[in-house]
Amino acid sequence: MASVRIGTAFGIPIKLGASFLLVVPLLAYLIGVQTAVIVELLNTTFGRAIDPGPLTEGATPWLLGLTAALGLFVSVFCHELGHAMAARRYGLETESITLWFLGGLAQFTEMPEEWQKELVVAIAGPIVSVAVGALCYAGFVALPAELSAVLFVLGYLAVLNVVLAIFNMLPGFPMDGGRVLRALLSRNRSRLEATRIAAGVGKWFAILLGFAGIVTFSIFWIAIAFFIYIAASSETQQIFVETAFEGLTVAELMTPAPGLDTVSTELPTAELLDRMLRERHTGYPVLEDGSLVGIVTLEDVQERAPDTGGVVRDAMSTDPVTIPLDAEATTALRTLQEENVGRLLVVDADGSLAGLLSRTDLMTALEVAQGSRAAPAAPRSIEH
Image (cartoon, rainbow, N blue to C red; front, top):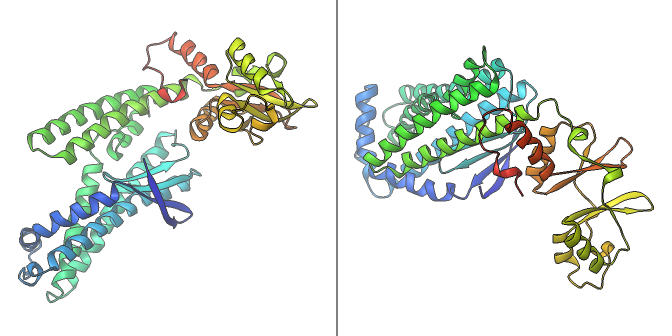
């Protein structure tokens, strides 16, 4: 998801997705054209007597629409911040909070595995939304009727925050309600089985939501349904991978250094390309006087030393992505995904080359695990 960082909150990067810049004007327009209807709804629901006249004149509806739209996304941010703060309580960090077309997304470095922790983190967001809604409602009933514009925004946000909390508690895994369901199922089931059940419920929820979107011609509901269905499938696959790699370390899956093909810094790139063709490898650790100094890949040669008259030193990367020998296999998988590389150099406590772990190594281990049980297809993220 393309996004731009706009600041931080409690040490958490805050980002805006590209779609955010499109949905805010659209939402502002929709609120603006329905100003009179919303005022009538607020008056009927809460027994106030807001005069719609001044709110529907000139540019006022559009200013109200923009303010309410931005206020809604601030509310969504508070919702996601609730998740992040609950996760931090258990030592789990949040990589970022991103606001986009479908609302907000808190990206955690890792998800809580204990069902009690996942339950708390999942319900924290809706609780914050209800709290924000309550504060807006308190302001709505306390302020005088003359402040009609302020009352409009507060009343709108009071309703929408409660709606946000209720909708998120529906069992559309991986929405909050779906995560609550998985947490409760995990009390007496394995995490993988609980995920499969919750994801199955989430998929059916997505299908019903998508059908409702088609019937009502709502692109928004269809988009949410699509996101839920894909995310539920992806989460199931991810949990299967984590289960398959549970207890495995990098040392057990890597190609050890004694059997590893390496190259020297002075090897001509022409010979390197010939070796790549013959040995069917596209990357090699680079050693100098027996010490690890970098890594060279086919992409490095193509980008930095297309002239075959050079040597490996001219093309290699001197800051390769490394991983400790005793790291967990799941950590290696996340590193490959985050760094978008095809292989990791494994180093020992002294920083010496101990081996190499590639996507192929992880894929092979996953295929072995799949051969022993029925499971979803391996995620594309670890394919070549």
